[in-house]
Length: 455
View: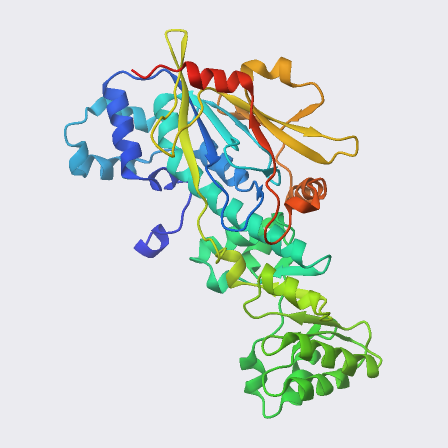
């Protein structure tokens, strides 16, 4: 394997895709005989800019990691060579040779709409196992949740018009491009330009041609004809390489098999109106107008408010980077330990980073039409008292290191997202200045926090 190949994550090196302190803590736990069960919860502290909800994503990748996590002999040799591990016993490295995840996982299914402070993922496992997995779980869930949420906003702004992920070339690396395509589809995009995402995940792939294709030929019309000859049933032409209006007129010469035209620059309101008139006059009323070029939910909402007759939006950079707020404040915190059969609750009291102790469930109260009214975060011990008329959002997905959940396919996850969002009232989905969805902590949970006595 070359150094370049080694950069791309495989099952053989997933364990090394972590922060050093996860492994130094693991060694310290081991040397001090700390093997008792612990529970960590992954949640988001606050919403990103202008967001009023989040769409859970990344669970499948998180589970794949947990169920395939191993330390190879090569990885162990590397760790032993590093200065922090020089005094660590051989027994710890023998432990790593046999390492696997043996705990349980509870989570919100991908596509679930959720809100800050609600646990999206809960890990209960021996302390070392629960600690080691923190970094990977956060990156798997944070990034895809961020992009899925952005995609849901873009799709909502498009008001029923199709949205396609065009962002691979602007993603933060090739792997990010594939994960962004996946998350975008979860959020409601109809397809992606990323071929690997189509190949591996079954997401519909969409694409036309670049300006370079048009410029390769002596005339614009020749480029249109040559492209149509190769793709007679899938011809969508990029018409703004030179003059958009003239390009639209030339595109009509392709005739009734023309599927669409794409606008990638200029005043999209004015140009789309003029192009629509040209197409309709030529009897091509079914031909779609595709718009792209640094679009986002704000620009799409503005275009449609001005009556732009655009049928499909290709969204790239703004989508896969969540450009207006490109990081999600997801955290992974210890909430409970069990030692010698005694459960010990854990929480942080530091300023602005206070957490709530114990394993939790989130219940969603809904009206008679299924619309969401409020969420209540409770200790799991309170579930019998809290369950009436409410829906539990967190389910068991792994038990004793074995998958106990039927992973849905991509279309199933997307359908769950669409269903979730359809029940979230519109005032919580506004692109800007949306109302704050009510999330409450139960009296039992508040009591646990108040009763906590620091050591």
